[in-house]
Length: 575
Image 1: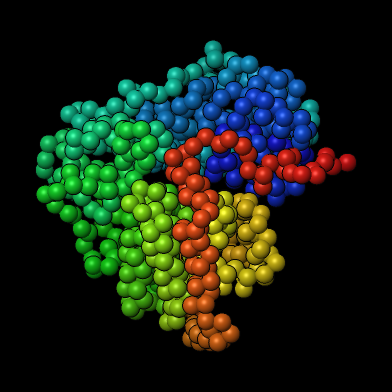
Image 2: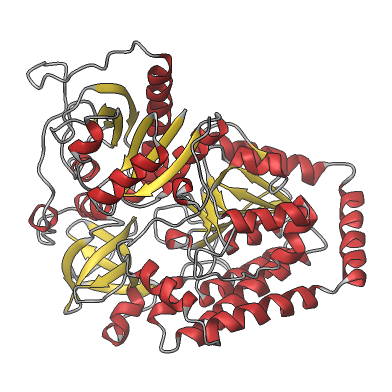
């Protein structure tokens, strides 16, 4: 079918559904919901058989839903209505939640139901639940709804609020007053739930060290600490530790309550206000922290099982700052000295990596200089992985991966991904960046020069299965997140214990030597960085403008042409 995706932004859920529908042969185009007239024009140009709205912040205009079937994806159970569905569910401790696909009518979230799915609630942030449980449920429900529409004859079910079987109800938009934390009364669990319910957006407004901020990125701390409830009592790397009435919690990111402020690591926002507070490093070597028995915040941790090493790096939103890249490089070099045969780079639960940290760059005194420092730091890490000669390396992608993160992963000998993740192996959306991380060496060797150029030119998301078919990654391992980790550990142990391990390592050394003789790695890096320097320091401000709009979440003024197929020059309806 011809399906138009109408969305506020082309977010992770929209990208997941785009990939799932594309692989099933549907013809897709995307329009960002900028104004009624723009959406009406998109419908007129594309003439879709079905309109799908995976992520909207306002109602579809009657001029569209009266003439076309429009399916809206709502992150709530059947009968739930309102813009803060997931926020309320997290904050009120719902044990089960769901996704409903309903038909747009004049009643917001009140149309008949085409499909619905439920899932058990995990104690996690709204962003994490949205990227995993909501995305999985939405995918199943949307595919069911699209199949029912395609078959014809299906009659969607109206929702009767008076029906006792309908648990959902209409709820208002959650206000800051509903999210407010009372540090003298709220437990650690309650406080974490409130911050989790607001994570991503809008955050919880609160005063921290005399600074009015929005709180994001909360992690519980199990170990006992003294101090007054609400008091910041310690810090670690980018996070601060705050006392509660029954314990403490870490807050990783803050956003000043001021015009033009952006979300940044808590220690960066508070700066000199932390003077005199103790640092609370984790145990282990100076380079890498061993996974502790209890719960605490740590962005890099290490585990070892037999001759397999597991290096976790849980960086917020997958962004890797200069210091994080340097610390991860130090950790990787430390792991290389361990008596292990396989190193598994597990990334984080939500993201493996999205490349350089655009927010930290935007906040820097000199964004061009910080861009240069950041890209060199991540290149150093990529080079170390490529040059690792005494162990096999595996990038195990539990979460989405984009831009330089995709090629940082490809620097490993093997790339294994969880089904359902989305990859964006390109840079051009960020002001036509050329990109680095040795992609000009790594990508053509895997997919061929022509296909590599196509991936960079298309700028479209691809699924893990599609990435395997294209040769970008090596395997898509079936199963849940937990099953994926178990399978990764099993496969890594098999590699470590394989009788041909020595032969694999020798072949790896020979391959790199032959590649270097043909063209040194330093030449690839120099050519990539020459292109990047033009974007960072040259006369064309496209990268700096694109980064500003990305970090400040500026509303879109138009739909990028690589998404809006119906707006391409010469595009005509298929016969």
